[in-house]
Length: 250
Image (cartoon, rainbow, N blue to C red; front, side, top):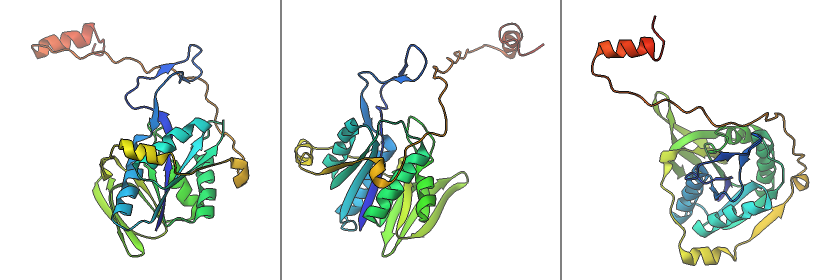
């Protein structure tokens, strides 16, 4: 079984982002970047399937600038076999990325494609489902458990009403939820070995994909700071504060 994992380069989850002075975008100058946490979960699940002798090859694919090779290399150090970077200077939207990944799928023909359920920057949760629609693959989103049985994959997914179990024919695509697993850390030995693993770099044009944006960002601003709550001694004091301070009561 060949597994394709799509990953994204994002601002590290522990970094407080800042806005450019002109409000045009997030300032990424000297900002620590990492593999999107949900994508790390997807890669970890693929590695576990390989360790269980279910998967034979793990291919990691990312779309972005040349520096995104760093994040692919992290995944190779964790246990992936090879990487592909579709190099572009454009800030692509989910549909364009899904089209690129669909072209990679047609070329590589993996048996299973695993996405993180969302990226922590855009929070769209769109690329995985769009990819499934473009490739006409069965999909299981928000997977909290996954098992492969012969030519089928069974996942437990988190829905509003609880848990739902679905069975999909392979090839299929899955998006990983937070509770699917806990990603491992790369050892120093594997980090050194990952430098020998191949990363192929191609352009969207080589896949007959023309990057384009369908939306325009007009500006970026910090969210409004929420006021801290207050403890009051009685309902009378609460009513007075709601009247005279919050002014939500007449």
